[in-house]
Length: 506
Image (cartoon, rainbow, N blue to C red; front, side, top):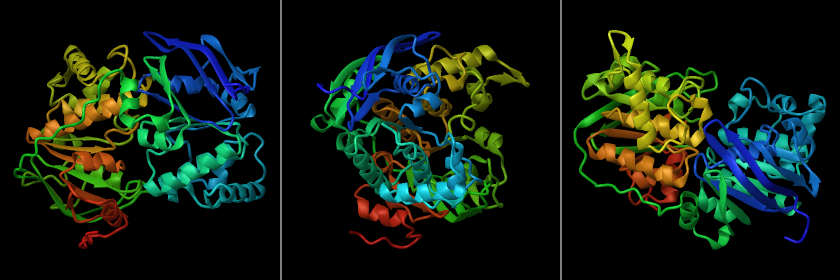
């Protein structure tokens, strides 16, 4: 690189108790370059971008922007220097408008009227239409991401960091986002892009740096490198493809009869007249754009939301008015989408989080007395079986990277040998190797006779592991179809609301 790089990282090192998150990391990004940062969960990607954004201070090494020393003490200083960041998890208030949310994230925000005009101008200029007076709780996931992006663009960033930006987007929304990022790149804005979706990396990015266990292990030009080769560079070994046995399904395990339920959230989506059967050994894949009833469906199946009698049956037994503990006792287990705060208690240790859902099925308590040594052994088993990168079971859930916590949550449920497992976004934010392992674990469960319901926005994932596919749209479920042979056009029709109708074969 002959020109002065926009960002130049040299020898960055950051250690935490028991782990070196970044070990002598060096990286250069040129103006206008779209640079991918790749690595397994726990490879050090999040720590690295947190140092760039001023959330974490490096122990050693230095950073430069346009040749000048760059050492932001806090995010405000990073933003002032021209660094913007769109996080994987949105930080928005549902009850406030778009303009009010954007104002909260700005230093010296103008009055709302003037800010609204700026939002319209910038959103139109970059092909991200956004009405500043809309309430955020009414927005789709893709529109919420636009709010985060516009908030960054209003501050004219020289470097835009994006962490898993397409995990909750439809293919059409991904196309719009990529058009925006290419326009920014053409104007000279550099983009540091983190994603586990390697085909997207190949389509968008100019360069890629690969991290493994905190160290830089390679660089590549994504357009000239296959997704499989990049994945194997990330994990340092050959990648295994999930294998399914293809046995005929058995008896009906789950039966829904006109399941309807209100959403517990004022901004949620009620379920409307869902009727379906899932059999032993079967994987039912449910797709749909975020916000169409996915969370509500999992809550109704897990028992977090109770239904009217007769709507939910498990092996012929009405469980509609049973809560989560009773359903778990029968063998109905679940793993929700939200990892921190729903699937896991952030400040509790992994041992305590293992106890939360497995106390009864794993005999971790007797007469109300908790058996902590047995709980620790169960947590250790999850960590070992699912390759959870953590110093130990005594660490708090919030100390894990998102992908490693996801592996722990899924492993905790899988190892309890459920008869019915319902999972929402099982591989969200998980690297290619771990995603393959999780999918194989779900297929193995089905092979052993469990019924599996996988709710996901990753259509490739659903097509890979599902026997049948259905789509959620506005709280209604389409008629299930055999997954094998479904085309993208057919899936699009189902996701667009072909409720219970025969979808034309294309």
